[in-house]
Image (cartoon, rainbow, N blue to C red; front, side, top):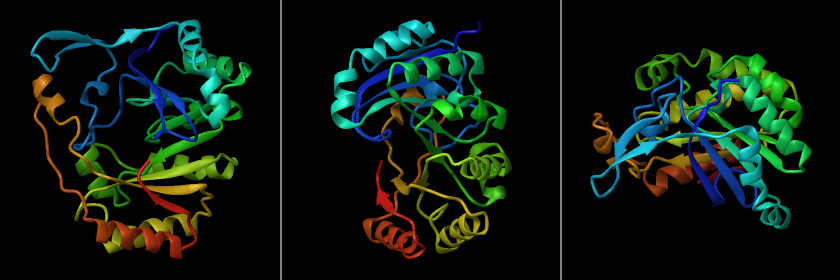
Length: 258
């Protein structure tokens, strides 16, 4: 079995789903968001980068399914007490070897550990179907509603993103929609109106909407990987609150942040 590369296992995470969680970050992503704050996640293989002291370090490690489950089990007491569990993130977990991911998700499920999937939606829906019975929630990223802008800023169309969101909703999946907020790029009034129209027209059922203000954390990683970077602006609090009220008026539970 082809074993994916993991670039981080983050313990005691509180922003990647309910409760206290262990977030496993898989390396490799099919899109290239210009604002990505984990550029080391983009390629599907181990690579070298500089640490903060300028030393060359290896980024990425392969774990067997059993090793990851054993790592997750170390904090099961915290999951039980907080309603937490394990979140599989990336990169993009849904484009990894689906046999491996299915085995991992099933293994966690049968251990009684809640599983959340953080996804950009750019993957074959068959992959989602494989794991759907064992997943408690999807953290679903919709980067930009306008397809031309989506292609410009991520390199790919959002057609598959929207199709998979609809299919997951129709299948009864529990979904938190995550919307990164980039000032004057995807948080204009017409952007919000178009997202609400899409959600309503397609009867998308959501648990909640997260508005995620753009931040510059991780921008130094581009330098340490010897890659170019693009810096964006964060909407001010007044604009974020205005956007939040608009989604709430449309009937969606909405919070600012993860």
